[in-house]
Image (tube, rainbow, N blue to C red; front, side):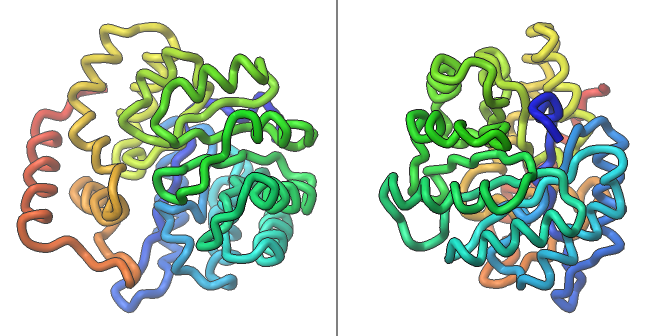
Length: 299
């Protein structure tokens, strides 16, 4: 996987669980293949949307192997690398390479909020652990740690650093990164409801969430924006936005799984400490889903 492979829509795939809480590997493979059938250019497992923090090491490796078996000959499989300790993340990166993954998406460490030197040392250790192509992940909204453009510029010294997932919600970060790095790293947006704006300022790709339920619409939206067909893109975006807003907030996993269930591609089972939606929140989510799917745009 090289720099040119980091482009297009890459689903941050959800992790499907059976009613007993076990990972449903059979549906995981079916879902992964379905996403690629609809035009996605890569697949990212073990991200936040994949509930990675609740998975054991053995479950993570099993998920990566299942995804690689299902689609690795068609598009790259990228492993989300996250954990409490640097050594834990280095080990997972090496296991991902052995499982057949083509790339890594490297998160900042959980819980301990290090300074710039510590965060860069953590990411560097993971990048150096394998020869796999690496995406650096900035999400200060979720993880508090803010990986600044100047830090990303320093980390770009690694030959296998190939992409950035920018999830600050600040479009200016993309323009800053492009000004600092030129085309050295592929720029991906990681928040669903800024995709049109991000492509307009030069994003190469989209690590998407609602794509888990609506891949045709997601790929079409990205393709229209990339082609500069702004009128058609905006029409589709306006239909899609109430669902794309589900990608925000602490219960984004539950909401996206409800959309999957509504289109017949998954269930609503999440792993504790997450619990399923209830009460007025569930009613509002179901109302939005019914409204948007009832007015679904043909693509």
